[in-house]
Length: 406
Image 1 (cartoon, rainbow, N blue to C red):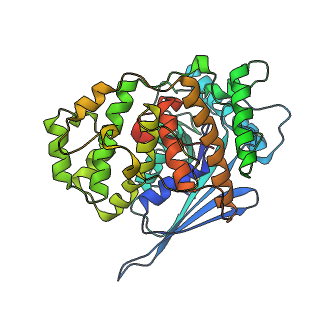
Image 2 (image 1 turned 45 degrees about the vertical axis):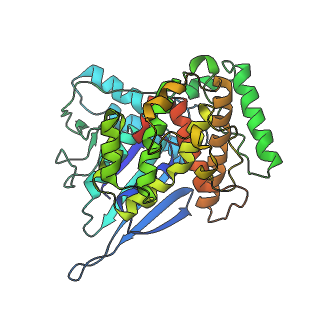
């Protein structure tokens, strides 16, 4: 085993998506074993190189929280109690760091281990991405590609040494981040809008015969949520529309780059979008075509399309009136941006975010159990959930880094 990740943030589906992104040619198998979710990836070797494989085993608390609940005796929580005791005995001289480390352990909601056989060239890249996305602490064995000590040790999200068994450390502090939603779901602090929104979403799912998980928490209260500004939404959808045209071979990447430069919009392009436009491979194009659903969702948010239809089928951007679409060859996209002066109400957008959060859980649940979900289109649900999480500033993440935790 290379290492074990411990994180407050949860999301096996996020892990699967990240693995498939790093290893697009890998043969992936997803299963459940002994109460854990498992993803295994076989990586074909070359002419003189044997195949290798990677295995990730994931488990999380049934009810994620910001603390170790005294009445929770599940295997993971008992393991965390042991981890807390283990770290308590580390001779860390920096008491502030020691206390922060122990506080972070108390917030852990999931654990996933990573093992490989053979050579996996992109291993360090994947580990870095996991550590950053999950804001994780890593328990690492000596002698691995990321090891920072000759004994068992812990690393932070930047793969810097928190502490080893001898008390050595390379950092002075450690961030302890807690999602507000876990505080909000204390029954004594839940607001009427949170409870009513959850109830409405569940009624919609029941009416459409979509599986429910009533243990899923409420989203943040309206008073604590800040929707992105209309102008920012309009700017984002302009860039998405341009990259989408490249993905569908309507224009070349060079034309898109020139267009964005000519209209002073290049600074709005994300790093991943710039990477796509610099090297628009067929594989990347296939990935980008799914952004149609994000485009539709953002246009809905700024009232350029009237409805966000039930996600059982793909949307058709061709159904949008030309005057409401962000880009055309004879159109200055800045005029489109200026025309957008208001977004839908916070309540409408949060209603949609809550509903798609619960839909996405149903899709992930079916996938992990090897079942077909016929009531929803999982790809459509994910992409709309992604866009909605960006709209409600989930975890304050930027477009490239949005999490769709379920």
